[in-house]
Amino acid sequence: MSSRYRLDLVLRPAEGALLRALGVATRRGYTPVAVDAVASEPDGRWQVRLEIDSARSPDQLARQLEKLYDCLSVEVVPCTP
Amino acid sequence: MNGAELTVCALEAEGVDLIFGYPGGAIMPFYDALLGGTIRHILVRHEQAAALAANGYARASGKVGVCVATSGPGASNLVTGIADAMLDSVPMVVITGQVSTALMGTDAFQELDVFGMTMPIVKHSFLPRRVDELPEMMREAFRIARSGRPGPVLIDLPKDVQTAPADHLRPLAPAHVPRPAADDPADLERALQLMRNAQRPVVYGGGGIGMACAVGEFRAFAEATGIPTVLTLKGLGALPAGHPELLGMLGMHGARSANMAVQESDLLIVVGARFDDRATGKLAEFAPHAKVIHLDIDAAELGKLRRAEVALQGDLGRNLTALSAVRPAIEPWRAQCFERRTRYATRYDAPGRGVYAPALLRKLSELAPRDAIVSCDVGQHQMWVAQHCLFNHPTRHLSSGGLGTMGFGLPAGIGAHFAEPDTTVVVVSGDGSFMMNVQELATLVRYQVPVKIVLLDNQALGMVRQWQELFFARRYSEIDLSDNPDFAALARAFGVPGYSLSLREHGEDALRQLLAAPGPALLHVSIDTQANVWPLVPPNHSNASMMEPDTDELALSA
Image (cartoon, rainbow over all chains, first blue to last red; front, side):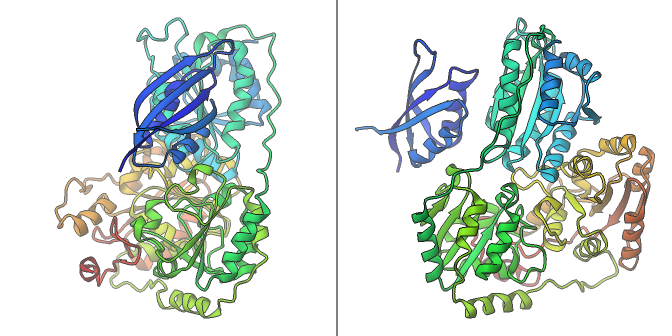
């Protein structure tokens, strides 16, 4: 049974960083249902809120995202129905 | 100095003295810069072979393999070799030319978004837009490729970045890659406690042992604990063939004694392995009674497919040394495992006069020097190599495990030769795989690479044929290769001595002749089209349901 989670990411402002993070989520079997991404001032870091739907554990996805060179932090936030 | 020359200097600063590649328009400044440097370039005949040769070089040497190609088709031809490195955690740096930044996004000649294309198959990638970014990117590329769980890193170099003035820049010194931190002593103690309490423990070792340079610690651990050990395809050699604790390879084509031990175990100590489906069979029925201690550098592998009672992410060598403090009292279990190893030992007395591939490969392994490297392709012969060749270190067995890349064997063998020029390198290939990079025979001749090729020719795509026979009611679809060329004559046309073998009684002499050849040589071996690889666990079945040639119908219905 699938559940919905939100992952709060901070990404380095590097070539392809946003695409790379979204790609990992979809390839690993997590369906994005909402994405909110803002390049913050003054350092240009991406502040990403990624809502996903999947039967798989969000912690597993968090570990995969943490491996990305451009991913500076990941936090899993349960979504309330 | 321009950006291309700076790139070459950065490679030299990283200790690179050899690269594999193929030039073209967008990478021409880099090739021009090579002329003034100390790096030797090996010109292959297809970019895929450049990536696979760098891959084989890295697997054999443990160093970062480097390959280069131009933009567009040059870059896209690298893709399979990059993916292969990603799936098998091989450290590589891949440099591609790219059209100038002003042309990017305009569908320019040979423009291809290789940065985007390879995103899922690289550990990381860089696309410098300014020459000032190059020193840091080059250093980071090598650091990322070799740190933690190794993997490939791509640098896509726009042509104007290569030609931009760079006199104000210098390459950076290589980054230090620290050893991983030690694990929490409390976690290690919990692991030791599980080991003390186990009645039927099994060690399940994988490719991570070799990559972590922990082969010595792994052997000491196996010997100190006396726990029966099984190895994955990539782990072969972590314990030398014939080691008293070794039961053999587990998995789809694993040894019966190995799979039975795992299925009956009450504790699995998983070392640098990742529960790959070819190793586990049906995951839900894999080692159903076992608790798990999982040691792996990659946190994302811990708990990914099987929950671990104790997960240890720290330095593998140190952890194995810490876990060597316990020798469980398991004599009845050891006796049972080793009795089965004897009872189910491979027999080489197949009927007939034709060449029996398992026996030929065993003989090859006995005749070749003990430290010979065997680079194989993908298919039935790959499994026969794993089952019947004798390896004393993981770097002696080059096999495309994760991606299963047909065409891997010859270019990877070429790479292995350049990593260890004084070591005998044998390529074992099949008639399907060999044709996928057959053009590299020209590379053998150009550089007089003394690789010995054993080409097992069953005039079919053998593994597909075997599955169609067993799982598709003998409905054979597109597996016939009976119109193969005369491979020995083909080799001779390239300038490689080629011999043929069809009778078993001539096998040893033919192998001796091959191994004694002063340069490259090819032995074309005709084998039975009907020959299959045994045992076999049917896909998505438990490893307990191994098929054998005389019992396949029975086993399938079980």
